[in-house]
Length: 380
Image 1: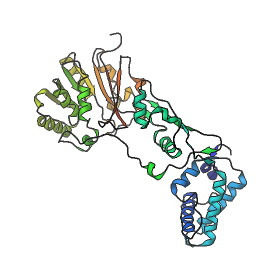
Image 2: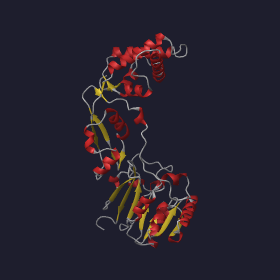
Image 3: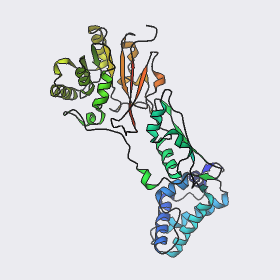
Image 4: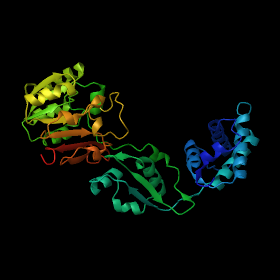
């Protein structure tokens, strides 16, 4: 079965009457006991090492696989009857470790080239370097452990609707090492600061737009009045008001609307904000008629029980699948705060501008959100 992972090969190899997970757990314990008794350091002495070995693409003949499966089965049979100090079982675990070592590709020890492709259109190079936490030219020579950690962290990430592909350039039969323990739980440099409003619920503490970002978004509005379609606890509505705009804030959750009122009062802008309790889809047509020429700001509640795809699209903007395009006049200026995975290719035809928003700290390496805006439909 060339070209398959060791995990897949073992699953297809007889016998299949025992749990492989229990067998590998026993292997780890036996190898650790063997090491404490003065034996050699084993390759499979941690769960991460075992998972890395099982995920490796190997070339093995049926005889090797049957032998390995037989060893693993023997350990499961004696699981409850014999302790890890048993020398015979330790010898079996050592044999498993040696056999797996023969099957695995050679682990890279020198610097490797890392290729990152699939970037979304318009994502600047300086943003790429910031997200990867290194100059792009340094990808030509990356330490193997660091390369393994970057593959784990970034391969498959969706950004602006595009999926990143991260791979190391390796010779045939060579693989990256297991991700070092110190890099497995590398802290995400999100650059979040303490909430800038006092009245917040759990969702508000998680999703409140950082003040500097909310003020930057407010600066993009070119009309005198803006409709905030999903006001939540009031962060963006208050930022619009602080920028001197008149604001119509819509929120479907009455409790959250009261939090927004309290925050607006605290910030001294309550008189600039008109609060409406209700569903945006129902209220928007009347609000647009009452306020012609107003801008519309949307920060939809993406995680409030909505059944959306991994990569949200334009049709997912309104809960319940309502067609927002049918509710909007073509001249209505739009400002959107979107998840970083949002598929920008699904936006309707307008002259869209995109900001890739990192955290407020200059050291932040995580794209927290997308700010997308357009004045009017193309050709209007």
